[in-house]
Structure formats: C-alpha cells, structure tokens
Length: 327
Image (cartoon, rainbow, N blue to C red; front, side):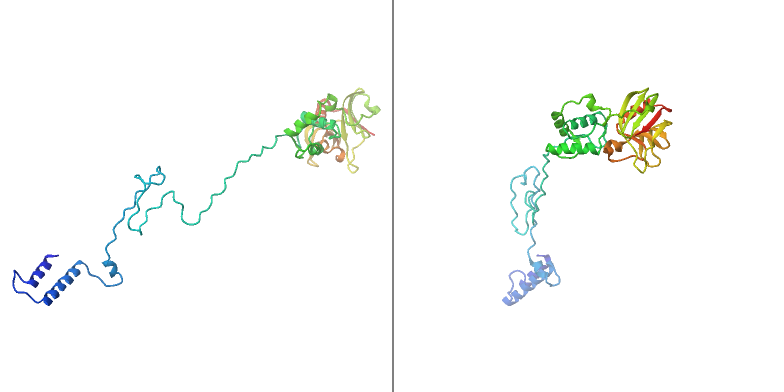
C-alpha cells in the first residue's frame, strides 16, 4: 500500500486508541480506500477486454531444447516432459509423421537386367573382305544367290535377314556378333574361287577386235567385261548397261580420260574409277549395281559392281587403250 493510503487509513480510525466511529462509517471508509488502491493499480476503459485484464497473467513456458540430431528425436537428458499448460504443446519430434495426408514416395526404378544387344559387325553400306566372306558363306547354305561382290547392299541385307529368321534370331538384316557366330558354325572357310570368282556368268567368246593390243572387251550378251592384253584375259568382272532409253553405245572406242573420284555433273551421282570412252559414257564402279544387281540399269555407262576389281583395272588401263562393246 502506498504511503498516502496508510495516512488515509489512520485518518479513518483516528490516532492512538481514541473514540470509535460507527461500524458503517468504518466499512464505507475501507471501501473507499480499496477503490482508491484499485485506481492506483490501473485504469482503463471497461470494454470487452476488461475481463482479460483481471485474469492472472499466463506463466511463460520455455520450450524444451531441440533434440540432438544424434539421439533419435530425444532431448539431451532423455524424454521431454510436456508443460503443465495443455494449450502450449512441445515442438514436434523430428521423427513424428507429418500432419495431413501422406504421399508415398515414387517407386524406385529397378536397374535393367536385360542383356545389351549384340554388337553389329556389318550393315548396309559396309564393304571389304569380310563382306565378301559373309556373302560366300551365305551362298554355301542357299541364302545368297550370286557371287560375292564385297558390298553390303539390299540384296545382302535380305539374305542376312532370311538367315536370321530361319535361325530364330531377330531379323534385322544387319550382321551382329550372334549372327556371325551362328554362320561360322554352319559353314566352312570359303575357297579363293568362292570369295573372288571371275564373274557371275561365264566370260563370252571375245570379239576378234579384242585379240590384239590392250582392250576392255565388253559383251552385252554375257554381261561381262574382260581386260585382255594380246588375246590373254587378265581379269574379268560382271557389268550392266544403260536402259532402252539411255542405251550404252556399241563399237570400238579409245579411253580418253580417267577420273578416280568422279561425280556426274548431269545426275549428281558418284562414278568412282571412271574410264571415259565415248562422250559422257564410261566404265566405272556402281554402288547401286553392287547393292541391287541387275534389277536396275545405268544411264548409258558400263557399271561394274566389284569395287576391288575395277579399282585394279583403273590402275592398269592407260589413256588410248581400246574399249570394244559388242553383242
């Protein structure tokens, strides 16, 4: 009680043991002192918040220490006792499940256990000695109906596809390691004649103009070219000719120009190892002939499908050598 309150109280009762006032006067005086004390503690508008002012202040609650990350969600001294006031909850344990619906984690993809596809060894566009061996082995067991050319075209791909389908493997037309092993197990090593036959067809009887000098002797009837020197056949190869709309000229001509990596300016197509003999007509290698055989035709040139043979021919023939084309 403040000093002024003490003075007021003394005035109400008098000093020492003097006369007494009536009980009613004492009660009224005490009530006035209490009211004065109340106003001294705090005043304010008596609004809806007045009741709150009369409530005892809430006791501050100290949150328990955050659990250590190494103690599985417990405090440093064990389990945490919740505070007495039920309206103040302890912080959620890190291991407690989250409130609300729980979404399952996405399934973890299992590593694939399928074996990798076999390695492809040869495919359309490949060429060389191994392609020639592939063709010779396929021919041994009836899947390739012509002499080896050394070029992997559509005919070879179809032959491989036929072999794969009959042996129960995926028929891709490309020669992978599995296909090659199966083919080796079913065939023998090709002979030199099987790998490099002179021509698919027998060489025709040479025209009399081919019997002297250095001559490219080309028969339209047998569809063969024989490279001859003084009547002796040095090499022979299969050839094809132009269509009826672009026929290959017949007669005797000299080689007047050699172009190893020639590209046709008229048709924009490669003409490797070209030996020109009449205008724009030449003897040259044809990838299309190697791939599709006699199903097509040239634009008048003499196509050769054996790249190795025409490459060797290109190196041997000289400008001025004869070209004889006959039936």
